[in-house]
Length: 284
Image (cartoon, rainbow, N blue to C red; front, top):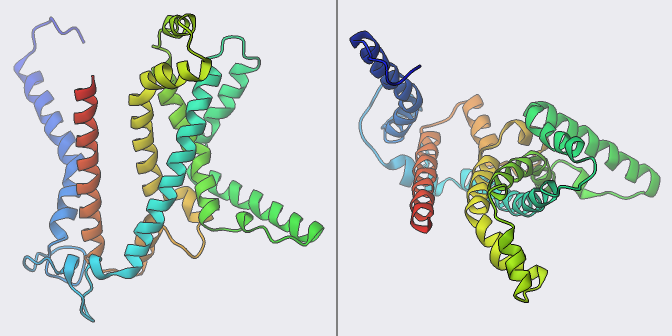
């Protein structure tokens, strides 16, 4: 579309209508979920029965709020722990991967770059099943051959961490690589000429330049890990993450406490995103 061309009234109305419908489609479900978190009903749906905050604070036999729901609180803690380790491993590996793929004389660079992208192309369900079968095969082999029971090869916390790390690290690599392509390497050469060692140059110049990308990629990695369902479903053990726990509650029938959890997550992620945007602009 050529922007300088005059726009008809029909086009202007249609464009505005499209914008309105687009954002209604995006935010209407979130808005309804937040509203129903305060619905005085035993069911997480309409009709509206009145306003209440008991789905956050109640501790009764027939109604338990999220702040007193130990099962959901435990699942939130498990998800936070998984997301922390996935973010830590992904940021370290992704940053190192970005440095690796920026090397001009790196042999088999294109082949390995393609292999790195494959976890993002493979559906999460297939990825989860593949990791589960691979870990079970290794666990069986170690048990039969050396009579060793390796906990890492069983569905559980660390297998979930490794499963999510397998594709989230790729995303971190792409984000950091995009920032690294804009880096002026003459700054490193100048620092080396002034007597700095290689570690000091990377720490004080290169990583400082990459800090916005690393922080942003880490935030995205944390959120992706916290809400991941497809891959985690096949790797989780007795410690269920929040998405798995919510799925089980919805499947078996739940109360509006799931709306309360959703409301807190929406407020929390929105606040974190706004703070990150604010400090990024302030730093720039």
